[in-house]
Length: 366
Ligand SMILES: [Zn+2]
Image 1 (cartoon, rainbow, N blue to C red):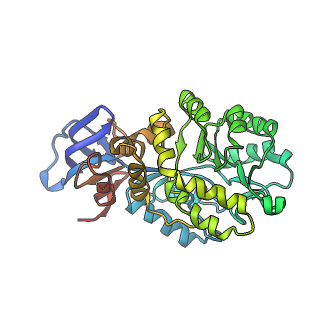
Image 2: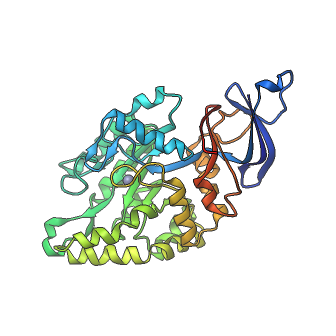
């Protein structure tokens, strides 16, 4: 049995003094009849296990990775306090993770859907014909855990020196694809860097936006009004300058990526100020290391989002959005215990005293 004392941040307006973990579940009622020798006490600031809504377990820089590497990725996430992952597309079958009580819970989006030469090689599932998208969405809906991931834009190198970000899918195909996912009970999220892909995504009824660097003010208002979350992935956008530097043959693209990079903090602050629901995603897997959710949260605070909102977004608000319980009576005990209040200083997220997954202390960091 665990006894967590101090402050328990269970929700925006739900702060308590203590909780207990009995048989892997949260209770706020002091258990009776237990010998104190059986109780492990954790002191500090507790909050529901962190949520990385955009990372890729099973994906490395060159595509799918072996199971031992995927396992290390999941462990790195866990040890950083990330106990729930919405996997934003993986070329590897990671279903085995579900049988491992020591690894984070994963909600999968299946394989992300892209086109040949219009995304990173070996990352996504590449459809030769755009008309295949709705059928592929139906298949990935069946493979995933309630999510489908579309790559909505990428550089089109066939344009030669004019190569720049362009939508991958015609609007009507996109609309049918989203309808297909919804009919199958899945929500759709979409990778988008550009402005050009945004109107089609909104018209299609996309549920969530990844990166979202190209949203213009008129899009931002609509996204806010419709409650569509945006996952800013600032660690990823930080790489845009380096991507531009490599794109010497595509000056338009390079210029755009530099512009998006330069505006990244102001852009995220604008999203927040407009009332857009922001979620926290590292985009780990590929080129970014797993376990960096606290760094992404710190980037969002640097952009000007209040730490209290970032912490909520990285924890209970993301859980609520994904339909996974936080710290409520009887919920599975997935929580982190910190030395200080992360709403005062978000860096506290980076130094968990204890990580508790399914009621077991899986990591202590002193
Ligand atoms: Zn990604």
